[in-house]
Image (cartoon, rainbow, N blue to C red; front, side):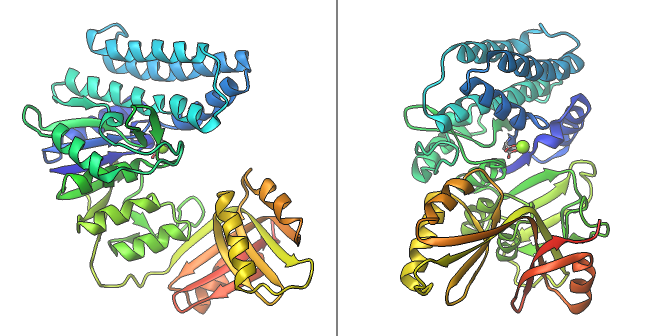
Length: 420
Ligand code: ASP
Ligand code: MG
């Protein structure tokens, strides 16, 4: 069997859904299809969640209407009528969401987040599964929360691999159907409470299913021709990378290339399952294949992380940034869940580059007791893999270089934009 994952962009409106269906028709079966929320719906649900949690009733209602309207417009276009029998589960789910929004939230933000935001994937897969059946591409809708079991670390749940394997193998039997449609990003605890795997987690879902089902391959369908050597929205000339090793793919996503969710590769590598990244605009073309191949990618890869904060910590009592201090500092970052994108140490300073996120302020306040902190906001972190002098010159032009870190394979720069 094989697994295919379709992200939000591949099902962002009715035409996209029709294109999705034509790909499903052509791909080899048996397949499990993993789908994300449609378009930018997860962001829309996050906003809904904020209004719900903060008791902003009017904002919440108008955001709900927006979300409902978005899905109904797609459903209308696909089925011509919102009240066809196959749409019954969709309406039931909508009523369920209304009911939930009428209950006051608990005090546990992350828990409430998973309960609300998960509707994005549920709506999307219900609509898609119904539409596939409606157009004679018979499939079974699976509630992934029943078979992908996790702990209760809401918004970042950890998979219970043994239980998930058992349940998925019992469920995805392909005895009466060759196609299953299920949700990415979601999981469920053993008490059937909804959890999520972290933003952009649907790739990871596909890899989990691939692993426990011993799939022949996992394919991720994207709006780009494959994995590119740079983000085309930032850099004008991009090249497709035809083949990557698992290790190289992990490196690229570690440095911030938004190729695939970083947790995706390990479950595939463990079982040597190849992954393909293909374009849903040109399903007939070869995209990027990811496997154990030893051959190294030599094409330069450019990764730019924007909206970074560059922070230097110096100890107030002039104690050295030695191992004991270092482990204290790192433990603090882990506790506040702030990910370090670049790290440098010197005798008295500890310097990092991190994403500008709301978790940062409480972390800085805690550090303030023992350390002086200085920071620059609005810097960018550029990583050039397989660099040379020319690519460095070209890509850092118009920037002031605040810090750099050069290794054999990577040149990394903390940059400040000087030209407009
Ligand atoms: N819908 C979720 C998100 O946008 C999961 C995913 O797309 O992978 O984060
Ligand atoms: Mg998404």
